[in-house]
Image (cartoon, rainbow, N blue to C red; front, top):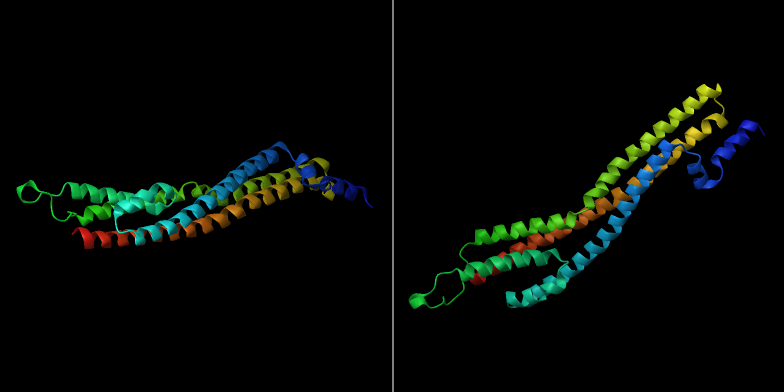
Length: 239
């Protein structure tokens, strides 16, 4: 077996830890940065997965309570137990606006209270619901954008490591005056490791970013439908 091939086997053997140990400082810095991105993205993936699941489940429960109750005050009483649902925020904004408009309604003849509570402006109520829904959507999207950043940035960070490893390989060829496998193996190993690390960080982030975006769109549609349902009830009973 040629000696150069044995040297190449030594450069590539020993597993991933051995490969990383043989990389240069720049490649180690690239790998460290990619590990940080990967760990942060996986923390967000787990956190958002649990929070979106809880938000959807509590939204389903809230809708059942809302449709079975005959008074807004009854629904408001259970909101504390279902805070993870974005529908709760939309309902509370609408409920507050309805209460404010009803309290400010003009009194009846002789200063008596109006026979029927009345909402003066459905447009104001609509704006309050839309504003609350926008705030809840922003809350649902929080931290998910980091997954998009990881998916788009880490392949280029890995590519930088790849280019640097290839440059080292050519530099070794120039210094040694030879292009055999033993000479280029360290530089090529740097290039391959950083490329793989970049893809390992980017692929899960891209997959879960798209998945969570679709779940958030479902939740946003639920909020839009609920706002329309809330407006219909108010229009029937308070105008």
